[in-house]
Length: 174
Ligand code: AMP
Image (cartoon, rainbow, N blue to C red; front, side):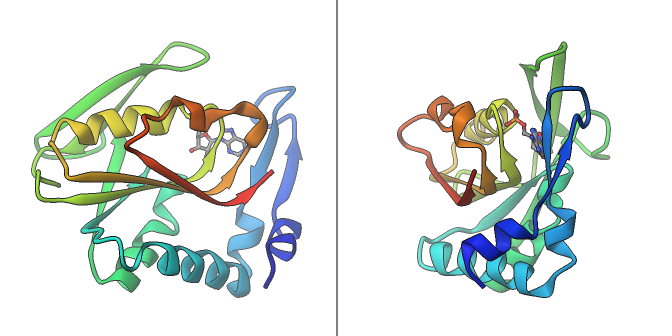
């Protein structure tokens, strides 16, 4: 399957969740096994020799593909969740969103300074959520941070938020 064929499987939903937003709905791609293969095989080829030790998925759409990749890389999966969802001791970070402040958390024993982490979410828009997740995992002193998205909205220039030592890789650009 080509990038253009995968793009054709992604549905644009106009004015969701609020007026003026074109929501990129990936569920229409996820129901097609060829698209799932495209995503996972492409990510596997990109990351298989980089020494990644944990795949970290960002709630909630980052939970769909990240565990499949973790299985394929034969490494663990770790969730980053919205405040109040994780049951044990957590580290957290707050960040500004368009309307108000959001807080995300990770279990404090989920990763360590020995880890090379791959943070994954479905889509890069402004980058605020993933930037906060990077700062959160930095608190553990991890060896290296990779950041991955299935889809990047280039016009929002979200990737400019990330420090030079973070490698940002998106499979599809719109
Ligand atoms: P941001 O922090 O602005 O990069 O927003 C990223 C998160 O919001 C991702 O988890 C996406 O799932 C979601 N998101 C933001 N904008 C869109 C969009 N236009 N279409 C689909 N998802 C979006």
